[in-house]
Image (cartoon, rainbow, N blue to C red; front, top):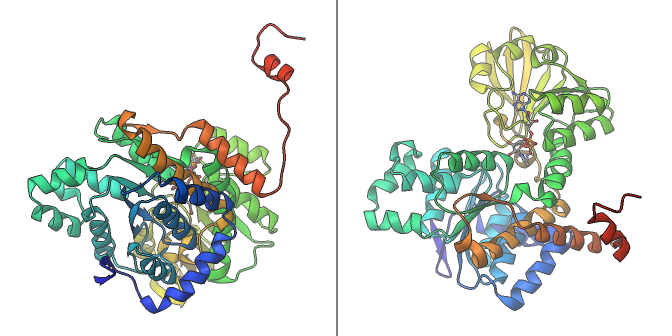
Length: 446
Ligand code: NAI
């Protein structure tokens, strides 16, 4: 680890900072809501002296969030929430702004967890997660389940005194969680009665999942696949697994590009919705021999399995955009392949299965962040406005909230939507007094 201006950091190359600066400023142009929050934060300093550790994808948009928290008076550190999603120039730039960044694109598992350790070592009062890695590690520490920690964290935990362990765990006022998969984990922790502090489910805000998951993932997933492969979508058969907020975004955009889209689902309502949206719906074993491109977005495990790889046609391409790299059963692919992986292009690897070529993108990790730049800034504007307001809310109200998963207050969600519309110069109608009365009454039926 290196030190500059008394901050610790671990990034790939500090000489990339100027490039990072330009890229962060470019993203900022598309983030007017976050900009307004930053301007208010700079005046009011609602986070003065608060230690915030964020475990997020280290992108240009995240950089703008970190600078917003800093403008509000927070002392911040940032580590990656995925080993492949870090933009090294952005990491370097944030270090020059006095933010301790621990993230290197392509870091191995040990370095990834070393970086999580560095974030926890900082004794955060608020943590921000994208996939619950910080909160999960904190709770393993709290419950003294050291064997369930990654090796790096395990050996760190054994060196902590009891007082230090309590300090790390008890010092947290609350946390925020960015993504669906993280919230599933946190709700499971709350149901087991082990969650120790309140968590704000940023993903549950309408101004997050309706836009980021649908339009952000929809566009950036295809962007990642196109940058990795340069394939033509028109006329291709694209199998989309999962018709949740992310899946419907990808399916709709793939259709818009001329693909024949098949959806696979396990939920009857969502399968019905996909059907009535005009997609073919079938089980994966029927879709496997038909697809030219497979994209998983389920948050589930082993969605594409051994039998599916065996059934795929020559040249099939397989990618994942769900949070973890468990949706495509890569060990099964390795088991049934005669040869591979053969690296064809960056993060494009070919296996030969029964004499047919199967191409795996980005080792099954989030394709939009590994092979492209993640979501466009314009959509992250709203997601990260939620994160910034959630931090402020936790500072103000955290001590009154139960140790559970909470939504951001509805007024804040509405306010973000209002600011976004205003930034797009879009005005809407307001209710007249008569309409308000009518809509809140039960006896004015005609
Ligand atoms: P969601 O809960 O709205 O949708 C998931 C869908 O997958 C559900 O309809 C569910 O029934 C379906 N599903 C579950 N198991 C399945 C299986 N075996 N086969 C077929 N379908 C199955 O979740 P959302 O918001 O769409 O998120 C999906 C994943 O994407 C999560 O892991 C989330 O964390 C991640 N995510 C990724 C982003 C990115 O930048 N790539 C951005 C936002 C979320």
